[in-house]
Length: 166
Image (tube, rainbow, N blue to C red; front, side):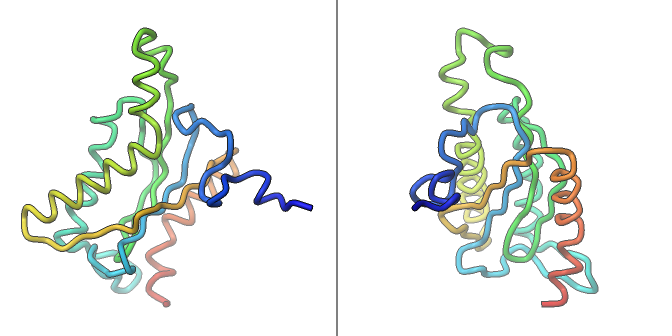
């Protein structure tokens, strides 16, 4: 007997088996700092106060669509030891550049976008003397409908107030 989880997700349990992460969709992402170290700032009275590293991460998050034109950003929150965000992959590569579809799919895969964001932020932080390290993996959830999108947005918005109570 197999469980839903083992049937649906890849062997390591982190990605939905058979899902094309370069296809149009809404994805909720959580990226944690290595060891959950609070590089990105502090929560005070339910509000996030970004450190220099947090400001850098926020700036680079906003740059994602510039480097990946098929990606749009929705709600996000930089927290002391993680970032939550919704990335919307909105245009199939066939519409943008049919002849380059294969290459576009490889370079505009959600995993590539996240790994490039993590690498760039780590390198830029190091160059300006800031400490920043990310866990090797990230969490993703495929947002399936409007209610899921609404609840995910609300979770992100409420995160600083909830974090303060830890």
